[in-house]
Image 1 (cartoon, rainbow, N blue to C red):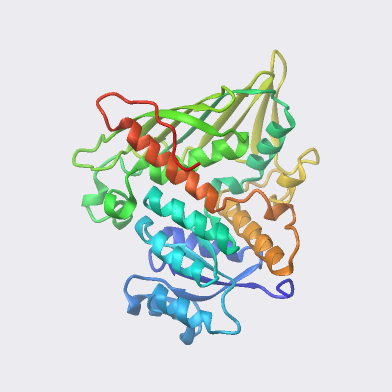
Image 2: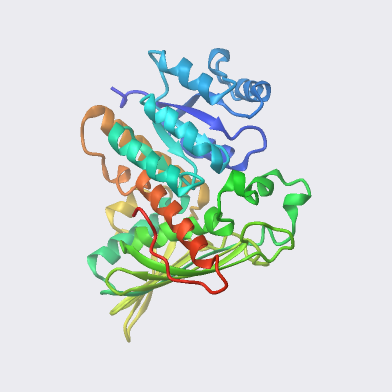
Length: 387
């Protein structure tokens, strides 16, 4: 039984100086559900082993490569319960494929893969294998995002007419990839990152958020990609118009060159009877507006909230909860889903509505469609493949 112990986590990548790796480690430990017992943390085996030892990992589980971790952990009676992949995009597919084939549960950074072909193959493999596969769409961990999803599904704003979602930031407003910033360097390299720049790095977060809250299925899109920084190969700004099944319309903006904005994730959903608005800089409020009526700030931590939101709240009202806690909610959900799988039961509320391999596939298909739409002299309407 896993309920009497912490789940054992292995990690690939995310070593010294890696922001996302440190975030995964903070998030997974927050609720006491996970312990990191193994890892191959760096492309350099020596650096990776040294980092593992500094993290308190036993020497015999401080691995040099993903292959070594897989082969050694597979033979252990106390093997890891899941492996987190925190490496550049182009490495996700081969690592995830091998881990799934070996029967490991996986938690993978987004996007799922660097190419649509690999995403299709990996999602099919996961579906047929029966392993749990979570994708780190962080913003889906916020309590008030789940509250919005529940209220939209109840029909509180009526039939959805339009969705507007954005993720702008200024991080790459200059050519930092050519001035020693390793994180920017691989994100602007199509070999390591894939075909989408801002649209793949942050636009997929926005796309997943819109789909999760509304439940709408994308029918087709048209996009305009820009490369504002001289010499940049991949887009650093994207505008996307979307048409959903059933008639709803959508607008998505992602930008890495929006000076003055820092991870300004915002979602607005407008229906026939009202609207919901959520902004990551004020994550504990969901703004509800009625047609010709009141405007209400629905607060995290209040009794009126759905169970989906309540189980993801951690502190009393008035104490802000932010990004790391949203990330921790993902790990709390992943733990519940994996425990439920081990124990042959349905997961509790916190282990439901999680981003999985299929969500990852939809994200990669979205990026491919956006790039295809914008490749010609004039943008064209494209239907995303495979979803």
